[in-house]
Amino acid sequence: MSEDERKDLEIYDREFRGWLPERLFDAHVHLFDETNFPLGFELPKKSCVRKFGGTFTLEQWRAGAAELLPEQDCSLLCFGTPDKAADLAAADKYIGSVVDNERVFGMALLSPKENIDEVRRRVEEYKLIGYKPYLNFVDWKPVNEAEIFDMLTDEHMSYADERGLVVTLHIPRSARLADPVNQRQMVEICDRYPNAKIIFAHIGRAYFMNNVIGNLAEIAKRPNAYLDTAMINHEGILEYAFNNFPRERILFGSDAPIAFLRGKSVEINNQYVYLMAEDYQIGTAIYDSGNAVVFTTFFYEQLRGVKAAAEKAVLSDREIRGILHDNAAELLDGVLSGSRA
Ligand SMILES: [Zn+2]
Image (cartoon, rainbow, N blue to C red):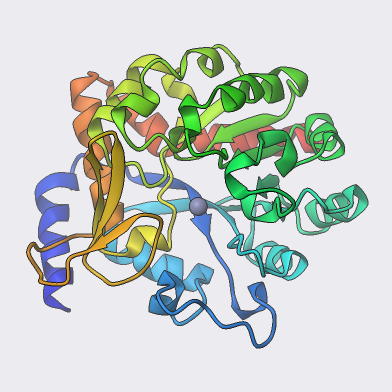
């Protein structure tokens, strides 16, 4: 065991043992084998995927989770990695090969250009419970001008609505959750497709307080709107979400494999940065090249954030279990029983 891993175990013993429920549901995991990328594709030099040898398979996830969560029985919702170059059909096929719809649930990567018949085929053949669109695939305008309704089509959403599928949406635009176009379209997508479930990933990508304050009110009123907490370790943001959004519609998610890196997201002057113990390029990153501090994983920092926020917002044990497991399990069970009906 490395020194870092020994220190992680100490954190587990001191902070999480006895607090974490026996079952944990990670609702935001990127899984992929070598087929996710086309042959000859070279990962960027500082891509964090390099740390994992170019793949992040179910086995790799399980090994990482077993180290960080030695006592927990883990479930997950997974999808490929939405690189511009990704081979979506191959990525979905891999996801289809690992889902069991009991502990492991999967989504199709979705480009707005994807033909609906092909999308339907993949969802049905691979027994997926929804889609993960991404702004990388909106390539006809500057990325910051992409809108939610550029990311997927009415046909895609109508099928999701008809089947009651789940869509994990990484909202676009530089103002993120505070952007007025997003605010309007987040409400619209929920209202127009009431039988689809929309998970706004990363709490609408609000990584600093002023981005979240006042901006959950409208989606909170939509019964088919959910939040995942992926990569949010900011206890103020989590506390705000716990107090301003129905707790039974908040899902813990890690954003593995990134969550298995060592680092922490920190708010600075109405912005945020990832302080990184390792020199990988993720979003806005500052690398601690001089080893100024000892880091733990983003995964643990996220759990710490949830724990601190749950204490401040006075969540019951049941609500904590809900966020860390039950809410996601119930949501996905509902999707499956709907599609069996
Ligand atoms: Zn992600």
